[in-house]
Length: 234
Image (cartoon, rainbow, N blue to C red; front, side, top):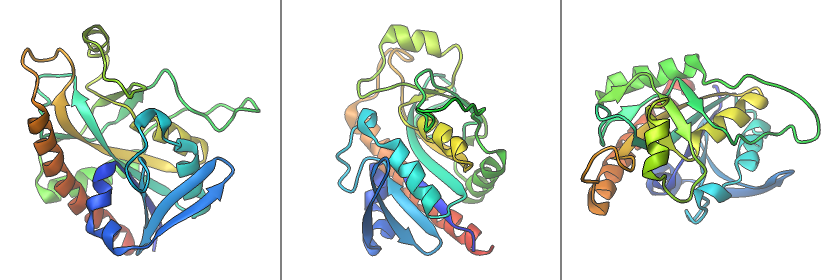
């Protein structure tokens, strides 16, 4: 039975897996690692056990290092994004094949060691297979642009990055880079909750964004269950 790591946002705190399992906090060289174990999986809420950690304060190193120490080989990220393209609409999902991050984290602070970051094609295919099974509307490819946060982007910033990417978020590329540095395979599925600043003239209301997040959270929970069942077979 293959062990997998699942990293999600605040939605993960409301899943049946989180509510039924005992939470654990352990200290590693990079800080506190909080997670729960459920069957063959280890679930991590990147925003903390109470969802209190903002994007720019997430301890990505502690989370990825912690999963490595649990003998996890495959890591799946569940991320929320804003769309940079009119055709990619709120309510859709996207499985990135590449990303852009000009402020990447690294475990190699004290020695020169170079890796070529990438998203696992093997894990992407698994996510695509599950998305098709669940009959959700998704894009099988796309480029993710990682910004720092916690603020959203200016219209000028969005006007620049929309030429090179399809969605924008604050977390995924950090996890993907660190996972590759430790030899872990990583892939993500992103829920499109809104259009990025300036893409449309009339932005979605906060209520509409929250409604999209609720819908995507329910689909994410179903996908997590499918992932757990998929890897239980091995």
